[in-house]
Length: 322
Image (cartoon, rainbow, N blue to C red; front, side, top):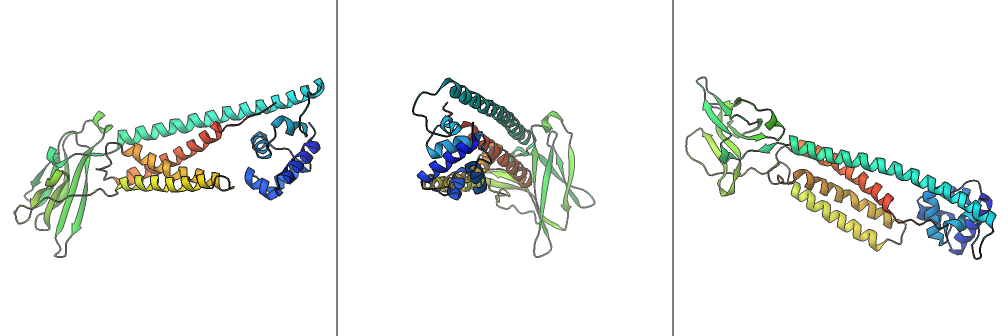
């Protein structure tokens, strides 16, 4: 294999296509200095660049290795030389495929692990109608909630009104992991008599809304609805929409050098939408622990994106013609 002959052949084919070194480099996603090294014989494309190069210049890999077009049967010596060169390339290709398979296995296992961990540990908020807690007012004026057995814990939020009073809302939750570790009744301090005007238990269901467990004036009040802290459903829709716009733009501009880049960029919001869908399946309407899910969605989204890029590279149709 003569690198100078191959380099001259590359330069000849490039000029036939009416491309500059910079334009060819841009299409191959390499530097123009790399193309210059190839054409002067001071360097040689690696296997991935060699395949892309043969595709862009519309010649076979064998012709690039030989440094000229093959129109007639080759002598035995040249056939042997090309065979040896091709075998080296195939061994390099198989080596890269093994590395890609290891990366795919690692990324895939990590993604599955994150999904399992989030679903096993994610808090499931117990509807107010299931009476997960009982309210009590102690003699010293403290208002407490006694969580029933099996309840993992509760989140408490306090809002101070203009008259200095406090409106407290709390929600009880459990998780699949916590079910393996049964807990006895727990006591949670919610407020003090005279300072707290209302205490609500969320999440409510249907038109009834959240349940009013304590009111300073003792009068009943209409149910209110506590919305999730982050409405992830909109994130999913927004990600799908962004992916559709970027994907359409990439497809329309696929013949431009930045078309494939747009298509790869479109995968990013799509992966985050898929991540949110996988982690919130069955609970997207009642997600209250925002930080917990947010970190899981980010981590899984990046893992899925890396997995998609490796799959694209692995499954990209390449042909080595000997």
